[in-house]
Image (cartoon, rainbow, N blue to C red; front, top):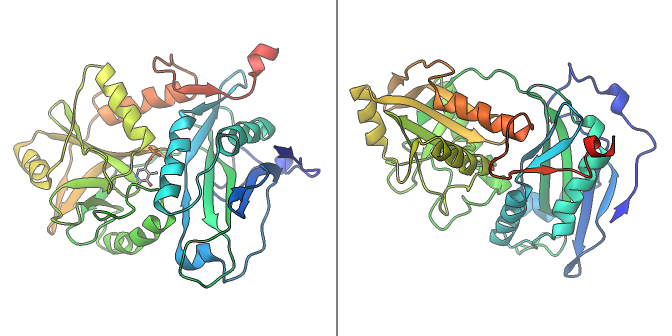
Length: 357
Ligand SMILES: *Cc1c(COP(=O)(O)O)cnc(C)c1O
């Protein structure tokens, strides 16, 4: 690994109490380029732009995928990643599906850890703060040929994040548009999956809904995902979530929620979730909560679901009553080293500050 540190850190311009998520980037990034059938040196270098031409294949043919993960800093200044090996496995699953070269452990896990160590000052400390990390792979060959690229770039960049209060949202159950199809790329974190979702989401926004609950492409009668999150439904005191598939992304947050809920003794049913089942439960008054889960906001709770022109309101639960809220608190507690980690999910970055002191 080649490490080239910046001579002009921007850390003094970073105001923890006033920054914009997603557009403030840390001092460094990890970069590795693929050419002649192999990855080159892994480099940690100052964050910055690269030149590209409109003939870049990633832009024309969409060979691009990414990951989303977070690092947390505890009160002693120790930095933790959360289940990073899951993201490493998944980016390679995505790469394979998009006919892109898989990345190595040195590039992803070692690169990640080195970047976190070097940019640790950028990880805001305190309740709800974290650093959002974006590893990505995209095609860089300059060629207008409709085939897979022969050149790629892997990069890891990072942006500070804070927990902002997210009010419960209204979501529209899709009866026309699909996020993913059988045999398609729904289980890959492909950039194009996001592009395809923006227009239907705009249409939902126009109808007064913030998000879409995606249903299966063939019949639109089963819940699949919610926006860019996995979805959970609570009927009575049982939690339902659809199994992952070639259409449903295998979320790390989803898996963690299932394990945490089971540990508490909550019944979790991983099976097809029919739209009818949810609508009937609402009619009978047994539908208690629906929520989405993903790394970025951890949990997004829903206040209403729209279906066939009707808006069905969900009950308002207190923090204690809500599985979504209490499971989220437990998960974030584990991620940020406030709670015991019975599953061994946290990974300490470097040797740890507390050890050295
Ligand atoms: C990233 C993503 C998720 C959530 O995955 P996490 O690993 O929990 O962040 C869920 N669905 C889609 C479509 C995604 O792209």
